[in-house]
Image (cartoon, rainbow, N blue to C red; front, side, top):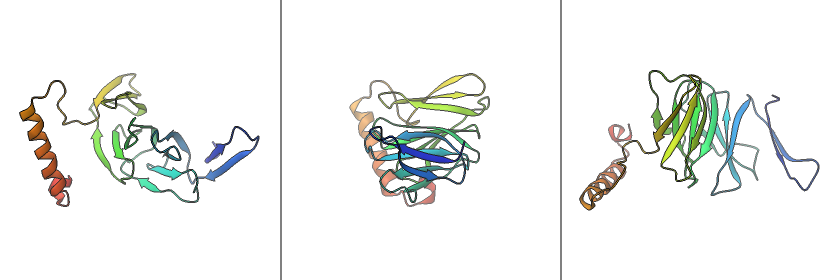
Length: 173
């Protein structure tokens, strides 16, 4: 309620570090692979990634939502995280990217209050104001189930083409 993020060392009786933000922080999640980094979901439509050793400024500001971000959760690999927002969308960000790589929404979905990754990172679950839980694939275009070698080779080729021409606006979109 006081717009601050406070880090406590349990061995001491006083706070270790304190950061006062411009707007309220709704949720916070630690990166499971880089334990000194965390991401905070904020009321000002952005998420901020911090290094706990250097709290004077955010490492990355993740933009894309148009309303308050309510929850954030990291993939078990620590390479991406998911956010849920009042703008009725679920977005997936790379941990060091400033814009989302994936956006999920439906006509009936209301404000999203909570998001979580499954333990294997294949799916993510969102809970919204309409009292529904929705299950999403973390990579929307990925085929689930048994993949033949020919199909896997084709997908690897398509991924290589995307990586090669990523600088073009049509491919980036």
